[in-house]
Image 1 (cartoon, rainbow, N blue to C red):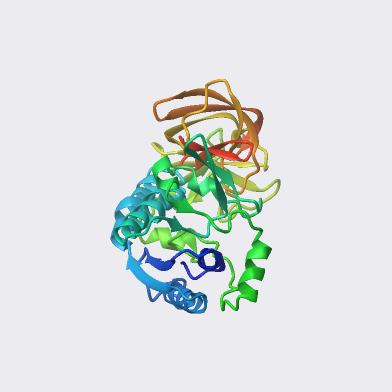
Image 2: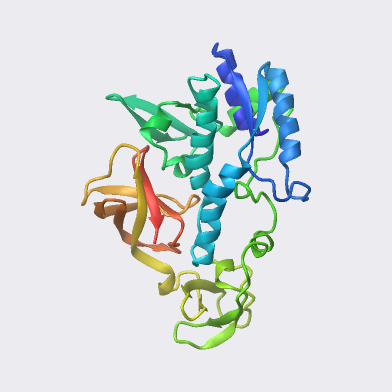
Length: 344
């Protein structure tokens, strides 16, 4: 129970279904508890208030050490290497569905539940991971690294509901957080200015900002602080179309920028991924599927060009914009999430 409406309603629905429910509030970040952007204290108050109305116990557990070792260390390593990681994917695999699951099993629980918008379906003794019914809230992208052993112990009680219905259920039940705003920040950073946060942990190494042909047009503050496709925060104005980040030349410490939303350097017809993880086994080479290369991007038709070990290569019939190393490519077969890999 995070203090948000989704996990609160998940607990409520399980309680109504007759399960013995215990709420668990996870504290995963300690570095700046007194910071204006850190809402942990208020979230715990909200979770406790909801648990009280639902009539379930609430336990607070600190996973900050595990988070720093399993998620944050990787996060910093990726940024320092010029990639743009998605820590929420790693947090789900390592904390919410590993550290939390292990803790729950030690308490004697048989299952854990979360407020994620995703669905599960058992077929032939295996568990399929499906998109959430609310397409605008579907979170299967962030769950694609979960294993069969993890999914067999999980429930997603709000996965078949629309967000508006979740809020209606919460309001009718008298949950005090029924209208609480959804959190939108990265799992541990919250709503704080991202560049300011990253600057605490990574040194700024300024260098030239150049066009593809090497013409210098400005100076960047450090390659780690930019992502492919970025427009805001570049600091380039002038005549013509807006500027976008197109490439990072790590060896030369150069940031390549281009003008135009659909500049050829921003478009890709293929990608490679490493660290592949498959819910039910890897898709066959040559098979056609759909893929997301970022959470908020629409599904794109694709062909699995190569798969083996922890590698995958994917081809697209239409160019994909701002395919970003460090983000996850996640493959789907209709509503079924197959798994994915980290784009390299």
